[in-house]
Image (cartoon, rainbow, N blue to C red; front, side, top):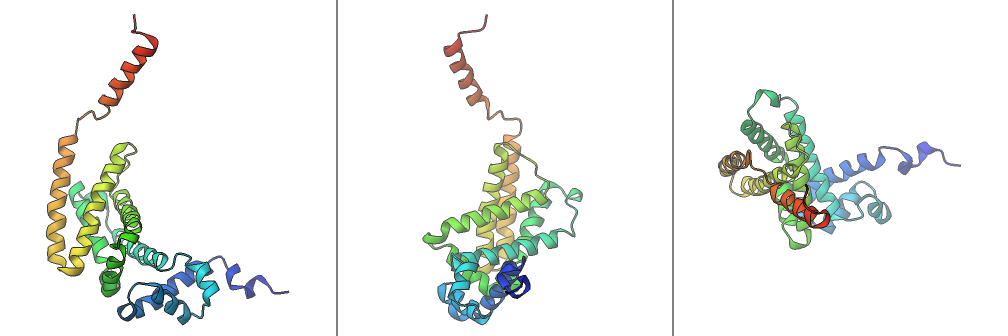
Length: 222
């Protein structure tokens, strides 16, 4: 009877380790094959995986491979930010530093990131691109010290997602200077918005509606 050690799938870290190895093989081939099913098959074959193992490891094919590279870049950015104490920076500087780290995290895989960007901009994969960008924005805001749990939690991530995605595209196709200028201008917009909404009671309309419905249901208070 085979032991646990003789069965690759029984190893706790087998899937994670193999995902990273397949991703490495994909990065070696993406310039020729592009980001598609052929790339997935070639990368898996290079690691000795048959179709069954490929289906088990990457059931969504190129989409799963795309998520692996995106999250590798997220991890690389967070590792770089680990050397920075956000408490020593103003909020504007924190956002700028966080976005810069995420953009710089792609530099080692420039060609692969270009192919990945094109893949995620296809209509059939736009949902994945939005999901991954939102997750990145969440990581960056958490590093920056954001603890909002109300609607601000969502607006901050929505706004930062709208900065990270276009900035990455600009860096890939127009260069770092264009991306940096875009980020700086957008952060100025964010700071202006934050100042404007400070002190605003955005819950007031909902609260007033609730009070009105309560009076209709239970009558005015004496």
